[in-house]
Length: 373
View 1 (cartoon, rainbow, N blue to C red):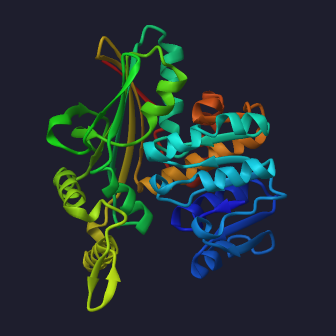
View 2 (cartoon, rainbow, N blue to C red):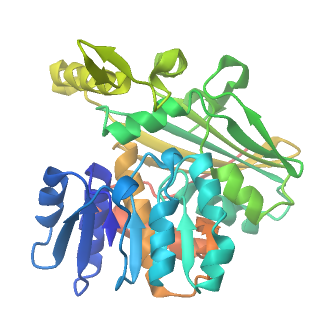
């Protein structure tokens, strides 16, 4: 079962349908159009259900695996996870907010009692970033910290859930695992800025603390680490200040509603439509996208080694590949029952499968690039 058939969900569905030619799928979404587009990927093997799981719940009976891509995850994804546990189905999502991640991890005892593996944060960042961190920590046992730095240049605003997530990061507390405890800072503010030299096409960037959940899952997995931190950067650099400001003046609060001409309007929906209109008016030559995830192993807070993956596409493409690699690894078996981050999936299996899927799709052409400092 795949929950959430937006752009990212359909990307993952297409990959899974190709990779599992004998599998049948049930696709759940509240949008008729999203369901129509999802079913068209493999009509003979895809059934659809029009359901708003936030209000109507989810029936996962008879499913082997529930793949949840219905964001934004800070509003809560535990309903789908609880439905999967109740049905005895494995569960996996691309949760990319610390609040939603914590909610899923709280289901650990329930998942163990049901003998069900529950995995959260299995996209690109979080997701592949966690696997790269595990790889670094095993190959360099002298490391005592990890910094994740994601960078994205988006050609379009994406779906509304993506915009909600981005703006939410400007107002949500940003976790950092430091010396055995979790600390919190503000997102995308100058006082958390740090400069990094990274591979092309970005070269040198400034990144800021974000509310991504890698510190939550990696800190739980390796509490002995002195540092687990996730920073992010939008390209060009002015976009960081713009998103931070827009989020803080009210667009980052998902429950904000204003009345215009007697109608309740969510300001973020107006902003989303404005950004799409701006995108449509932009010459195609200016619609350039790029995504990069850098995982830096540190010792004494000094960088020692970095693993990087880069794609000439937007973040959603990499996220679709990441969740597909994780889902296929989960179906292969050997993942323990309980609620965990993607670290519960053997990292080498996950990375290898991600790179194979990426190669098939013509993405992440350079593979994993290692830089030593």
